[in-house]
Length: 151
Image 1 (cartoon, rainbow, N blue to C red):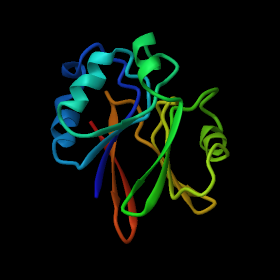
Image 2: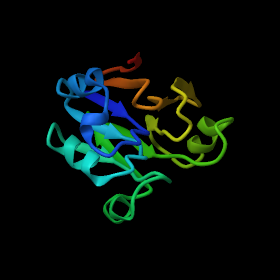
Image 3: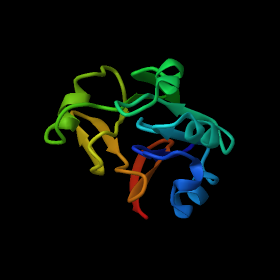
Image 4: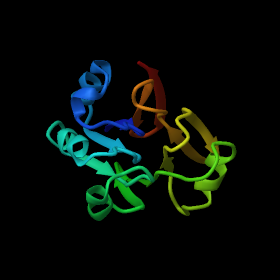
């Protein structure tokens, strides 16, 4: 299963996302957004492309805050995935979000605008960076493979 991972879109509409990102999202099985859409029209636009798993971020509108949770755990191909936006200063964010989840294989987060694709205590910590600059693909099968792609 292939996940298209984005975060921190900070957009009014899906058309404000780079064309490279929009095209890549048509080729995945699930879109995962780690918060800071800012407007619900972006979430609606993503839902028109593929199924979406998403959480709210600190910059999201009240409409999104009512629709989405702060953190979520879901399963793909028998792997448990934690999803959260994150908070605080960029320094040490991976370690902070790692403490938010137990019993997961992958933690996807955003907030810092800094890409991250590394393991901490046997868990893949994955931040695709800010959508205008980068996005991610995570392949979940017998193995888990994360990839950061620059726009």
